[in-house]
Length: 460
Ligand code: B12
Ligand code: SF4
Image (cartoon, rainbow, N blue to C red):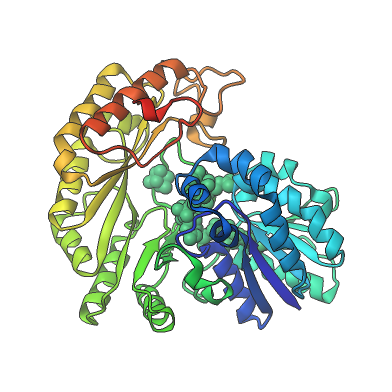
């Protein structure tokens, strides 16, 4: 039984997709033959420099409409290449922006290879509305959550030709003939094999680094967050396993730099301490960084230790410098502590990046001014503003199911950017522009934002 794992565009181009390499390692451990096709990086590497630049700047509009419209010939070229490869099962991953490409290639794949079984997993199937839009007449299975356990169950069922049934660990739903598979068994991170990067062309990516995971889930439940409940419960790997993975990848691929893809790298301080201790004691030279929360344990001595162990940068989800808003957001820390941790990180020699959100329900002009004042005050200690967003209400978050608590008006625009609370979108755009201009004046122009089509950034 041969399984092909394909990554749909658009996705990051820095390094290989971690989720698929975990799925690959689960299959490989059970001795299945597994191969990969990174359609995303293949297409990216075929583009001219101008289009590559667009890709790098995360233009949602380009991805949503332009990718298929302008580059379907390139997609065809790769699909023709793919169908010449021999495999029995095709597993695909992507994000919601991949929907059009997925629907475009599905009929072509089934036309050329009518016998293959098609499985879809990852972010693209995290949203019920997107699942509805997938051309399911071509899809055999949709795996709704972590893939390590479910993929084995599905492949076993295909191999044995025994219908996959509901069990203690697998829950099945049906949409037409497509089986929606959800496992009740959360992946045990201390038992699974390390990601199998060999399925992807490591040298084709833009950065000479690899993604790595210390943990899954998050210890917080911020009011706007979609990811924390989905990836719950919070689990960590063994520190020694992570160091071994880094070391083995270094030996195999000569790579020393790691992007930690976790929702937070400091959810378990004991893990962090032990991980750093091993690296320091063994005198290993690796470089790593990722997202972190503000917590009192992030004291100067731990930050210094992290720096010595190779931590190069931390991305803090600050969102707001107003205590009132941070408390409404359920961030679990005060602005005083935020300032302290950011300053200490910088003093320890770690590059600091922050994310900000404007227009959270309940945000007053005073709250906004608090944020603006603190951006100016902390300027010497902030290296980048990674992301400045207007508050977006995602389904199934506290902002959605407790909307009346947040005084969000319950109408058809309740979800998304256009909700009405104490501010409307017009006011939020005004506030966004104000903060953006201050960031720019402070030499901290945000790298990412979510206002495409709403604000002309070049004019700010
Ligand atoms: C790290 C990360 C990135 C990194 C990727 C690093 C890498 N090399 O893999 C980067 C920075 C590149 C990235 C980019 C984007 N990301 Co991102 N990212 C994440 C994040 C925080 C963690 C993903 C991760 O590595 N998890 C750990 C691995 C092990 O888990 P996994 O990928 O989910 O895979 C598991 C399962 O999903 C499943 N699975 C996945 N694929 C498949 C396929 C099959 C066949 C099977 C059976 C199972 C399966 O099994 C895997 C193992 O258990 C998630 C947040 C989250 N909720 O997960 C968002 C997330 C995946 N990203 C998202 C988005 C939207 C994007 C962007 C499109 C954002 C943007 N607008 O710019 C871009 C993509 C384009 C670009 N500019 O690069 C969304 C996807 C939403 C959706 N519904 O599609 C998420 C969920 C965040 C969010 N809530 O909005 N991202
Ligand atoms: S800390 Fe980040 S990942 Fe955790 S709940 Fe808050 S926003 Fe979500």
